[in-house]
Length: 160
Image (tube, rainbow, N blue to C red):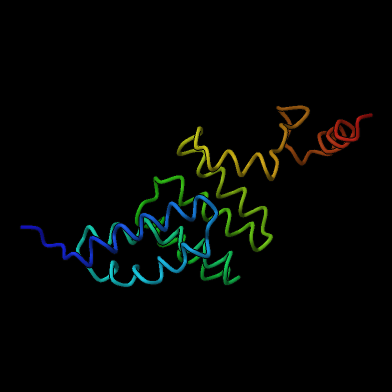
């Protein structure tokens, strides 16, 4: 006999559906499903809590996009990262929350951390393609902020 009640199984499925809706960009629909089911899952069995912990970063992204509560969105993403630090999707969600609040440097930091986990992650690479990737320094053995690299980089980018 399973220790999961039908309510918890339904809540688990709803959380998984909400994650899929978030990835599809349907955050208004997803946030409703999350809010109806995450509390139940957070108080349930170990399996329920694992699903909730995994879903929190997606919920955090929804909170940032729909409600514009960025600090809360970051907090939920970090809960997921603490429970599963090797999942690059949590890094992608955290980066998108940072982008929602116009913090590009922290977003790039989170995306690069995700790429170190999985360099072929489609979500991370798609976000990087949208926001743009930095080109390597002109003189690679010198630091990026070396005045010669800065000057040559500006010349390269201006087309002269």
